[in-house]
Amino acid sequence: MERAIFAGGCFWCMVQPFEEMEGVLSVRSGYTGGHVENPTYEQVCSKTTGHTEAVEIIFDPEKISYEDLVELYWQQTDPTDAFGQFQDRGDSYRPVIFYFDETQKATAEASKARLAASARFSDPIVTTIEPASTFYEAEEYHQDFYKKDPFRYMLSSKLRHDFLERTWK
Image (cartoon, rainbow, N blue to C red; front, side):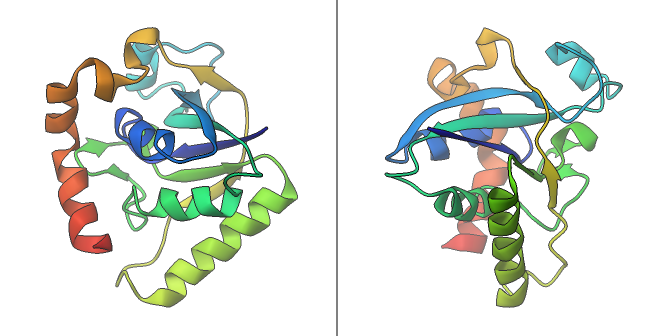
C-alpha cells in the first residue's frame, strides 16, 4: 500500500471523489504542513498553526497509480487559486500536492507541467508541490462528512461542483 496527501480546500469536499476510485482503500480528512502538533479544527481555523486541510489516501498501486490520483486531484480543485478554494479562503485551504518520495514529486511536477501546457486555464497553475510532513487526522465528525450530513455537504460544495462542471466537462 502507498500513501498520497492532497490539499484542495475544504477536506469535506475532497473525500468522496477519491473514495469512489477502485484501488483506494481509505481516505481520511486531516491537517498537515504546519508547526503545531495534534492541532484541532478550531486551531487550524484560527490560521495560527500553519496547517492546511488535506486528505490522506491509502491506495493499492497495483489497482490505481499515483499518477491517476494526481490527475483526479486536478479535477477537484481550482489550481489557479493560491489563496483558498472556492468559498473557503485563507492559507489553511490552499492547494498543495504533498509528496513522500522523489517518484511522487516527479509525477506531480510532470502532471502540473502538462496541465499548464494544456491551456485549460488562462491563469497560471499555482498549486504547490511540497514534501509531506506529519498528517494529523481531523476529529471524527469530519470523517466521511458527505455521508454523515449530505445536505450540508451539498450546500458547502455547490461552488466547487459548479466550477468543476464548467471546467472539466
